[in-house]
Length: 221
Image 1 (cartoon, rainbow, N blue to C red):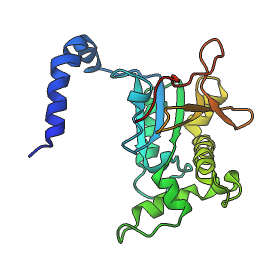
Image 2 (image 1 turned 90 degrees about the horizontal axis):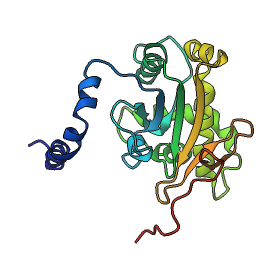
Image 3 (image 1 turned 135 degrees about the horizontal axis):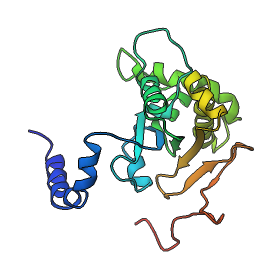
Image 4 (image 1 turned 90 degrees about the vertical axis):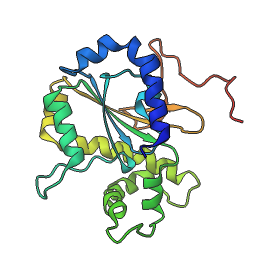
């Protein structure tokens, strides 16, 4: 049987959202023109469309373990993340790329703790080995906030790796494409944005420079 939760969700979609956005979906059937590419972790708790309250067609999203962007290279046969980046930048000509990390990232934790393989293929271990260059940015591995700093460092490393792609570097240098880093707090809902000059992460700000934070009235029970 198809998952019941999905059929219920689809029914709710048909009863509410689809009728309200029917014209939008009809337009999207022939083309898409998102301005933002989000590279996020595939963790089920971190959904970019929900975090940024985005409608259909507004975001082009790539999700993988630990929001990793590999360094540009043309060897091998399979480059899922690189292929999606290529399509977003060259095909769709997005104007922004956001690397979105998050708190309590399992991929980052698996790398830091040198976790045992989950299967003989050790696909997670091989993929998260790409976190290695970020270690130097994270500092003392014995510090209590090390995993958070490694999550931040991986966002920064992925941003650097994006610039190894010629088709990314060229529009960035021409002022046609911007790269951003961010980190989402799963438990508290806080979105931190990376300062391009200092590399530090601080709460996102609105159009007039005020920090955007979850309401103090919101509590978790």
